[in-house]
Amino acid sequence: MKILAFDTATDVCSVAVWVDGAVDERCEIGRRHAERLLILVDEALADAGTTLRGLDAICFGRGPGSFTGLRICAGVAQGLAFGADLPVVAVSTLAAIAQHAGSTHVLAAIDARMQQVYWGEFVAGVDGLVQLQGEECVVAPATVPLPAASTWIGAGSGWEQYAPILQARLADRLQQWRSGGYPSARCVAELGVRDFRAGKAVAAEQALPVYLRDNVAIKSSERLSR
Image (cartoon, rainbow, N blue to C red; front, side, top):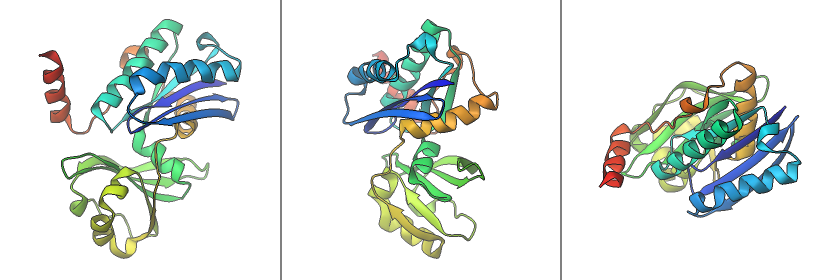
């Protein structure tokens, strides 16, 4: 099986090609996602010795995250999938962060600006792949949902920005938080392969971003249309 995966929901632009369990990944930090994503895709496919039409599916980070980044990611996923007649798997960006953290219990948080975080609680299954517990949400750091009593790891840019508030809220439920957490395309691929095998792939036109904060998406669209 051959899968192309990418995510541009944060400051990291990440692309990976998964071929029967072997993964080639490349990442760049910055805000040049629109300029660099397709270049990285071409490089990754070439290094993997395959082409778009040689793939089984495309997996993309569907959010939550930066509105512009999500539009880029979903748009490229749709365009490539249409052109190569491929199915698409949408993978939670929070889940990719949790998977990248490498722990069994992860509280993933992305800085959502406006004094809020995108938040998700994830537990790894017997296959080592994380599963969402409850629902993803956008919430103030001081009021994040309290997980069941356990030892949790924090990961993601929300922790970088709001660690003291989150630590005070979670108290002894939190073991530690780790800096540098981002939605690795390798993890998007791993989670996407699982969902593809579970029959969760969709047609290209259904490759849609998930914003969580719908009013911001609407306001941004209005600004772009002026």
